[in-house]
Amino acid sequence: MRGPVPHVTEAFTLEQRGERTQLTYTGELGTDLWGLGVRWGDVVATKWMSVVEYSSQAVKIEAERRHSRKRGS
Image (cartoon, rainbow, N blue to C red; front, side, top):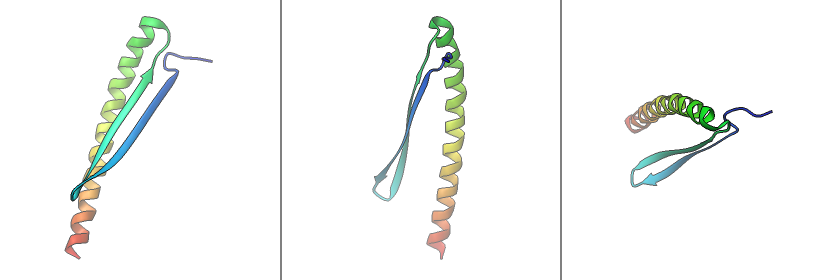
């Protein structure tokens, strides 16, 4: 069975930058069903990118909270 989004590949990469850590997200969304699949992929990708951004911000806030609590100990 196939649908308009046959594959998704994602990577979350952490890199040390001096005293900081950088999180980089990359992703690839494959589509089928010609123009219809491309349009559906655009809808899915837009929504998914907002979810990734929201989650990344939540992770950043928690990591900074833990770091400041650790430094205060």
